[in-house]
Amino acid sequence: MEAAAAGSVATSRWRLPSGAKLQHLLFGGWTLLVFAFLYIPILLLIVYSFNESKLGIRWTGFTTHWYGVLFHDTVLLRAFQNSLVVAAFTTIFATVLGTIGAWMMFRYRFPARRALGLLIFIPMVMPEILMGVSLLILFVNLKVSLGYFTMIIAHTTFCFPFVLVGVQARLEGIDPFLEEAAMDLGATPVQAFWKVIVPYLMPAIIAGALMSFTLSFDEYIVSTFLTNASSQTLPLKVYGMAKKGLSPELNALSTLFVLGTFLLVLATQFIQRKKPVS
Image (cartoon, rainbow, N blue to C red):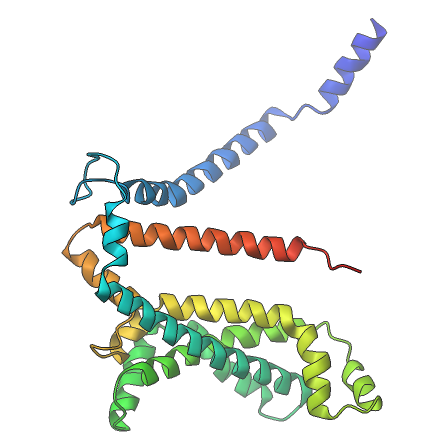
């Protein structure tokens, strides 16, 4: 009897009040609705990429035919190649500019530092259509032909502030004597930056590079104003195909991107959890 009474007391001690239970149920239900709203359309997209019907409206049978069509679609493959080229160069330029800019603003103090920081962050919040129109006017007045060069410049303009912000946040926790210690041991300022500061900043640099690649690869509005017929990227081609109607080929393309993103996230988690060998 005493053991039963003790158990009932312990159970009642951990029992949530009715108001708290209702609150947990409401938050749990809301969370489920949000996840359902986000992931059910993606699940349907993946399922219908294997649909035999050309219209993709109703299920008529299982097939992998549309993946074969996708890999033989030279137009989409060329657009994918264009996106990779633009995103790769954008990532390189944005990462270098963002890292050096963050270090210079952290290392040196000058009167216009705050004003310069504000000007650098403006592209992060500026409407993309405004940036696209303004850059188009600039390149037209400079008589620069639209294409890869103009898109890389434009993408770098709005990508490198994201790298700079991440690196600046990392720099807030750096030991200010690391650079001095390296130079006391015989390193030049450039060697101290490359061999001491850069390794410390590497997590922020990698995160900024991944962000830059993603933003550039996925960019549509700015690319619309600054591309030509031979340099159109994948988002432009996909949007043009989607306006003509639903296509299982687009479902197959989107499924491959979902799979690639999932594998990239798994690889990132594996790298982060892997302990270095001592």
